[in-house]
Length: 224
Image 1 (tube, rainbow, N blue to C red):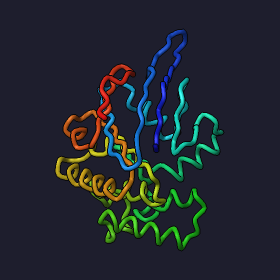
Image 2 (cartoon, one colour):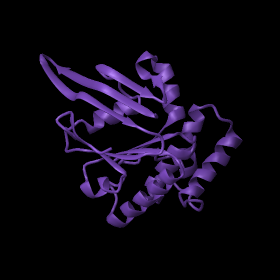
Image 3 (cartoon, rainbow, N blue to C red):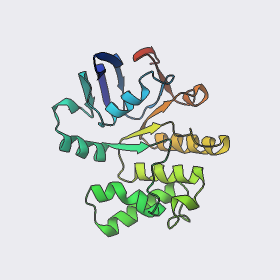
Image 4 (cartoon, one colour):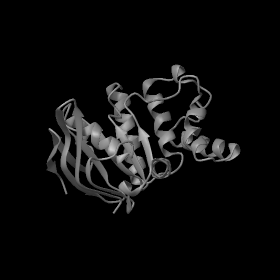
């Protein structure tokens, strides 16, 4: 079991107002799955993503990632777990504009204290796997949206994490580029990486092998 999400609640307080972003959400995800988490704006998708990515802590409940209880970890331990176990792909790519494609892909390895030669070798390999061997020196501004997302996927893959979290990965792309990114994500999944994809698009969600649907912080549908 890669992920166990058990009775997770997340409550935000604004003055005297209590907002339940997540309300007793529970699910499990096995290694190698491709799961879409779908819901409208305000349904709790971003909150789930942040907790899954160890970027936020739940108000209550238990989140186990690779059999590790994240609630028992301090911030430094969570950062180490995040860097070794999770790759992130964002709707807005989140590439550093003054860094080349290669330098952007190297960033997780820098944080992991990997040596310069090894960083470059692993990053070139990752860029090759997403079809960008000829774009390594290009800045984000010199790349199309689809190419920028491929750089982001290479960055997510470079330290070989078991889990990829993709937040609206086709949201800023045209339909052709979106299809190519989905094809690439499927190929990554076939190679063994677990993918959890956040989306509001039914057509994109239908391409996953399993669906978890949210509404008002509650899970209203869970396939499998």
